[in-house]
Image (cartoon, rainbow over all chains, first blue to last red; front, side, top):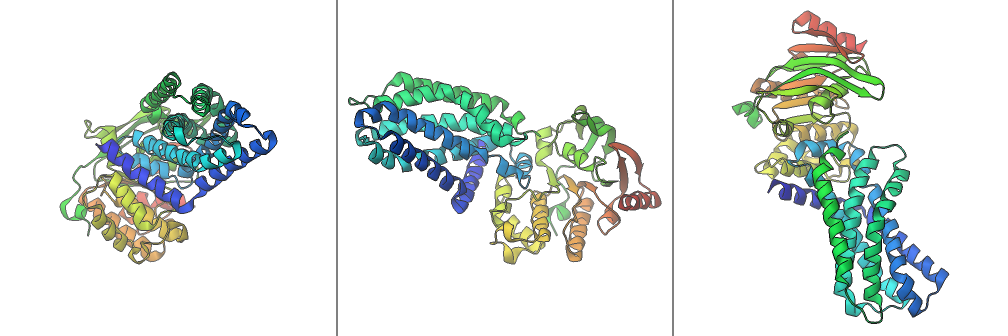
Length: 224
Length: 238
């Protein structure tokens, strides 16, 4: 119970500070928007090309946006050494991870859903019929990005050249996630859309593996 | 007067550091430090800048893992996790969120520490530190001294058994120092174990019943007698 109550208290703090400053959300949304628009203007894709390349471009944009968003995840806790205060206060250090993980997933999913209508307009891909399935794929993908990203952010926050280190560590780690997320999205954007459960299953397995790893070793990542 | 002062600290904790080494690369921050601090003792830690005071306090708070040696709490069966949650720590940094108000900060930590009736405890502490009128202001709008008051209030929220203070008077005005000395006296008399790094003599150092001097990461003096205690503290000011 302590883990859940600690996580809920910390998650409310994460949401309150972000919605008060809007630093992360604003920069990430603007970043993804610029990427989607730039891709669209450069490629000027037809409907068929959008179906072929759109999902890949979309997930690449999400990947870069996530690496931008996760950069400050633990760095913000170091400014006033608040991470030490949290470590002395929580009954289970996993609550610190869990709250950041939930917050990052929410922010990422919010960014993706806010930019989806713009993607639909620029790439001329109808998504209304598959919206619930798309939300499922986006949720699993965002969770995977956040689990790995939150863990690596904790490691890189204590390193010199952390701005460089985070994407260097994260992008290769995200390759096994990018493929099923892109393929599952592509199947949903096809002329005859279908939710491919094999790709969804890979996303679920990816999320479970990394969640378990963070649960087991997360405490060590928080140490100085 | 805090609840701890009236009824005494529920869990009396002492700590023992056994042959502690802390290395950062090839540099020793602490070298074979062995100390035993009894429950209820109030210890002043003195030494020049870089002598290892902060590292020692962070190891005692279990925020930094020693390179060698171990930290043991007494009674010996006390779990380290329980000891950590019974520790109050005031560091160089304020350890509070700039983008939250003073009240939100204290409520956050009170809820994490599962303090009963957190709102009432927070209100009482905000009045004690003289920030009740500014409770709705963001901490980033506060002066250094006001931030230090919030930091001290955060550390005292759960009336800790062990209080670790790294130069706690930093930024405080004379009234603030007097208030802090009075509060620490109450906690010491109630049975809290206090370990604080200080520079020079003050109302706060007068509370110490023992003084330890560190030099280059090693304990070079440890005394409980009045005259020696003063000499250790004044040396730190040199």
